[in-house]
Length: 374
Image 1 (tube, rainbow, N blue to C red):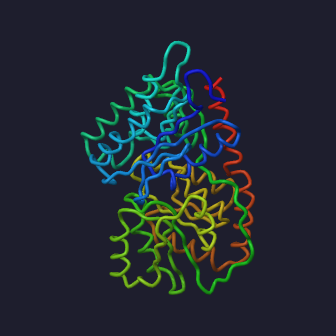
Image 2 (cartoon, rainbow, N blue to C red):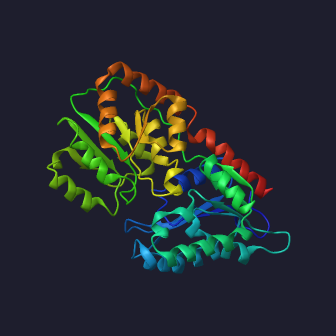
Image 3 (cartoon, rainbow, N blue to C red):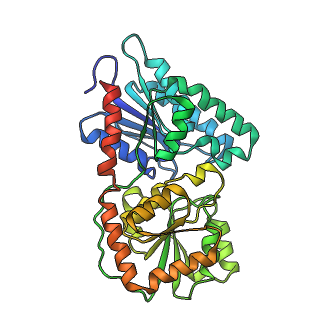
């Protein structure tokens, strides 16, 4: 499909590692799967930088803070400038600067680069930015200044889309952050050991300390498995030790995109107790929530509107007050002790997974790209 002054069709820029960023990976495979030429530029998080026709992973010394962004822009902007694509996708707020530089560099006359902003979150409401006024003001200005270059916006649910539409008046499409359709066995599980699973980065604001404290309210044969890694791993491990829960708390470390659902399917219940730290969290509809469903795990999630709406629509679990550990423990015990109920919840997850998967959502994504690339 490439032609004219462009080398290929779509360039995707992300501030994460493409090996572990499920959304950018799905974008890439969906595009190449129907014949578009595409490339992802991201960072290397495991010390093994790679460069191929489709994926560029640049090494950075710092993993967070100003040094990370300084390194990211120093290494990624030259790569972005070299890539001449018809459409550029900024995978988050922090990827907008190199995406805009690419658009301005390679647009000429009728050959105008189109820019998609994947606003997966309400970035103005991110707790990590709001804690530091200077960072908040800076990135708010970046986003506000960048919108005039954006041709289309993607986001993950209608609640966020409505807010962004009122704010920007740019075409917005909802593309939920769901996993690929995955075949998972729904055969009967043994309950000699009951495993609760959390999926995702071990970061502040996700209620991870409460997950460990929850285990103290459950019988000895209940265990908690963290499927992922992050800044809080050491702190969480220390908390588990202090509560004498070491043998019941397990850390798998980072898991590749295509292995997460399989890993989760070994558990009994998917649990996510995100804290209500503002609209960004309150309106969240994260990939990990859908991974639980794809793994056919009954879910326990915060009583936040978007997650609660899906839980109630498909009858796949419960929405609770994430700060009420006794209520949460009661739901865990209810699901695991009532085998008939547990089986019904898993059946409902099976039905929900047939609708909430990337085979459905990718058509919305590809529709946006087709419109811009014509």
